[in-house]
Figure (cartoon, rainbow, N blue to C red):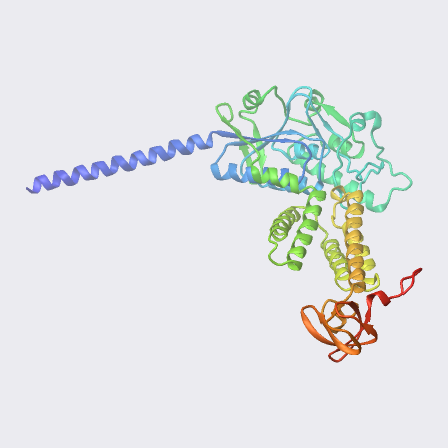
Length: 475
């Protein structure tokens, strides 16, 4: 009996050991498969808060899943300085190596894209691509070598894609101290990125100062980039065994056998890319304000309140990632409040004019980054609509004041009554289904229509309607 129990216990122990070993083996195989993954993200367009959010969340996902490599497939004309620096900051502290791959053929990494390429652990390009034109520029151009105070990364135009239109690095008449500061800051930044990975920092400086460009083959020959690859498979083969500089030391890439996982932009990124447009966010804010206002004026209407609440929440979501100037936002809201105040309690235009001034000024300075400024025609259009609303409300109040009162004794003045009997002096009339005492200085016949001209207590002063003098006529 004891031997039987011992045998059963031994079998249980063996099964537990086998089960544990199986679980561990499965976990190790799964971990190895997860680690042997190259995650590919794609940015095709301007660098914006939406693309920055997409890249940073993708990088966090790669670290969580233990991916071996992140490949950012890039084709951009440039974008915002703030969004670009957020992406670079996440890249520099990432535990997963990042390859910025300018592709497909015909793509470019201009302006902000050049900075991203310099910051990457591996800088790769497809044939027939180019990079450069990294000079910070003022929105709309203007020829400024330094851009404006907010340091936006201007988008490279087709005219900037060659050295023949390169900006001079020498200070020109009209250049301000702030513009020179912005330029020197950009130069130091891109040089530090290039030197970190042993790339050609002198050319990187020229890309900022002179807006020069290089093709993929020229960039490889001048040690600006590391690889020219026809596709992602070719890229993984070429960078296998390459040593890269990470934030905590060096790391040797093992990429020859990696499986590729493409990470597309999700609904959050798509939504953010739409509402992160300053003009859209601005309109959502205005719609939200007026929607909630109309709901408060007409409680129970529901539709304005629902639309207003949704619009306002979407606007706040967009403002979370946009470079919002809160003084400008406060002025916009104050201006709208004053306009509504003028509509509700007319002040002979003082509140309305002050509200329009605050609204326009706040709208102009709403965004800290001039490349993300709200369109001037849109501001003007919204201001005109707000002025029209204010004018409509004021005209409505004036009309209300001119209308005959509808309550109290004043309501009876001018009303019509019907004589209940013949009388001269005092008698009785019917008004609104009620019998009233009446007094008339003229003879009145039974059934005659009378007009009330005065009220004395409970006695109505009346005159026959046919006794009213009509201009151009007679009694």
